[in-house]
Amino acid sequence: MEVLKPDLTTLPWATLLAVASGYAAYYIANVGIREHHKPTDIIFAILVFGFIAMFAYNACRILFELSLVLSSGITFIFAMLIGAVWRLSGRGLFERLLRGSKISHADDLPSAWIALFGIKAPVTQLSVKLKDGSWLMCDDLSKFTTSPNGPCILGAKGDILMYVTHTQSDLGVAFFPTADPIDKDWGHEITYIAADQIARVDLRRKV
Image 1 (spheres, rainbow, N blue to C red):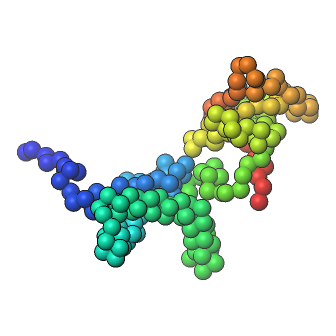
Image 2 (image 1 turned 120 degrees about the vertical axis):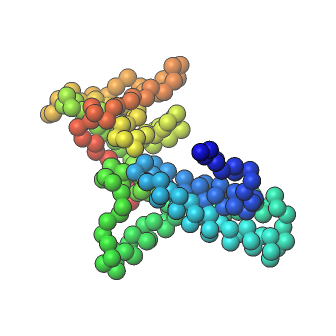
Image 3 (image 1 turned 90 degrees about the vertical axis):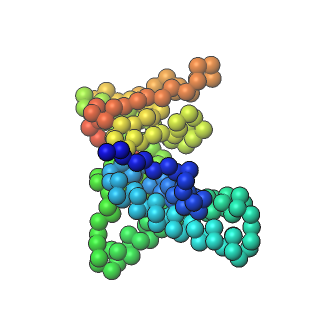
């Protein structure tokens, strides 16, 4: 029996736009915290965002009588804005509403590590303790704002990219500065730390 595969090119333009816009909004709203999502969650999130975006499309086409191309562009941008607003404030407000109404105190994230990605407060200092007992520290992340991958990367699987400014070989020993991680001739030196080598992570954040 031959299995028929759907051909996206045969779908109506409005349907394609809704799906594309919905995915763009979903991606922006969940970047860094979507690895645990199930296929069903992804599909319905795309549909919800796409449904909201289509209000902008219909308003452009019916109320303002704009062209198909212009209406589609506005709809796609509107969808991305929806995703950004949800990520910046909508999710937090919704979770506070659930807690305030005593419906749920969960944030629907699989781990405390993933919860770090939903906090808007900037990280100012990063210290990582390795399993051998040594510490790596970046004393001021603002120095690396314009660096490649900077000022740091907290991987969704627990690995870290950071610019090391100080090291400590053992507990009780003072932190020693490293050679300048930003060299005017050789560039920026970044350190990759695998998740299985990390024993502890300390972050300072401004509120």
